[in-house]
Image 1 (tube, protein in one colour):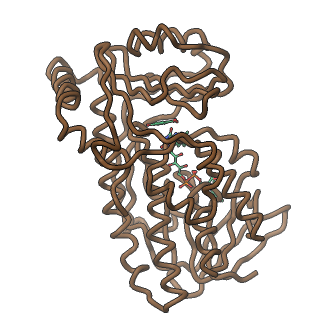
Image 2: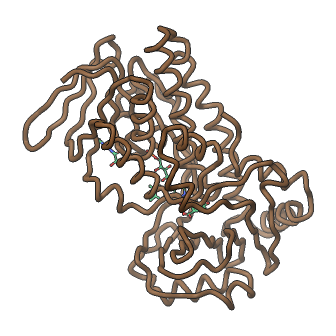
Length: 389
Ligand code: FAD
Ligand code: PHB
């Protein structure tokens, strides 16, 4: 098989890139290791920046999001039982959209299938070759048979545990990382959300987040030690702990029910540089991970796709290679700003056992400042709704 662009990974970044290239007449093939149901079974991000919303609309996959998603014009933050609101529209001129990553992915699969796109699932042992030549190729095994696709570019959209990043020689790749000493225990439950907007709660027992997917589906998270096991967290234990960490008023109205999904995700910040080597380009989690506190992971993957789709389309349509040469630099400038914001949200809102009294008081002062200063709220809102790209 021969195609101009092979995209490794059929998550949100791979599928959106595939769709945007297709709309511009650049044919491509997506190779995904898992089944479609497996990919759609993963519960991940829930908040879309406005730039992401506009990209999905431009890609022709915004209709269901616009019907079923929820526009949020602000969020609540809570600490020491007091709650305040940051108004995104007032402070930064834009809202966000609450619409799950699972739904974004479903819409993208539907759109790719509707326009005859090739998404090959259960592609095992995907391996790029010849990335430092002008004629790379990718091999994989499907139904026991080895296949080969010759191409011009290979795009690594294969997430943090994918195969692409490892193709960049160690002498070239710079990795920068911070691992946090805790994780997030998340549950999904078929209950009405406790609040019409998200609540990010700082508490001496640890951080908590109240989020949602729709009017009947809630998503809640608790900060837990990095070595916590999900088996030790019954639904009752989860709800009891959540009630303790959120403001009394919310705790009193919280509707609980059985969890339909429960998992623990570790928190880390990680950036791999550069995001291009020869004919290989990295996008999304394949190149960087942020802790989920700023709701940036999925949105950063989407802004990478914006820069890269623009560059590939300019290359094929106008023979203009400049965008490909500056892709890594442009994408990384935004990646580092989102990495900073996610780190700031994480350090401001979580409990750090080793921070001592000084660290604790500084954290309280930071939150008080945010509660009372329009300038501080503008800085938070501008980053939360998404920096321009
Ligand atoms: P992914 O969604 O990881 O997609 C990569 C795809 O590549 C996958 O489908 C994978 O199966 C496939 N793949 C991997 N290796 C190979 C291979 N060798 N060959 C072929 N295919 C391969 N962000 C938030 O903003 N909020 C959250 O609450 C949140 N929760 C998260 C929870 C977890 C457990 C994880 C892992 C991430 C979470 N994120 C969250 C981050 C967000 O989901 C990611 O930033 C987003 O999924 C990135 O999209 P992506 O397409 O780059 O990567
Ligand atoms: C979610 O709904 O899953 C969610 C929302 C906001 C975050 C992280 C996760 O910051």
